Length: 117
Image 1: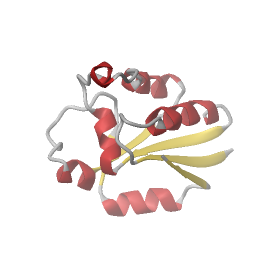
Image 2 (image 1 turned 90 degrees about the vertical axis):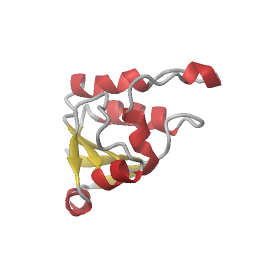
Image 3 (image 1 turned 135 degrees about the horizontal axis):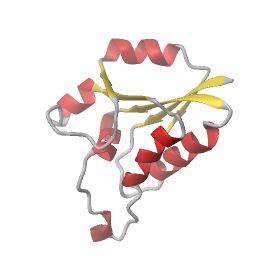
Image 4 (image 1 turned 60 degrees about the vertical axis):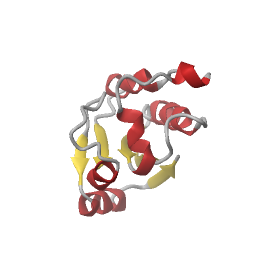
């Protein structure tokens, strides 16, 4: 079993990267230990009350709740990314652990594979 980090750093709408990251995490979780990291504009995936249909995009954000069903419990959010976007006090839509840059570096150093979306 490999330790696989999925880094989501792209915004949720305007490209398929977020959906691809989610699909990859769920597919790989059967045979690997998956950790999901939200950083940079990727933290916008965690905001409630999004309306992607307004820009003719499909709403896949609620599907992030599937992480827990697939036993993906290591979900991390970069504190600096939240702070830079003034989202530190905003409730996020899935269970997560907010971590600082030092913790982020340590956790990523312990991974066998890192995939960035």
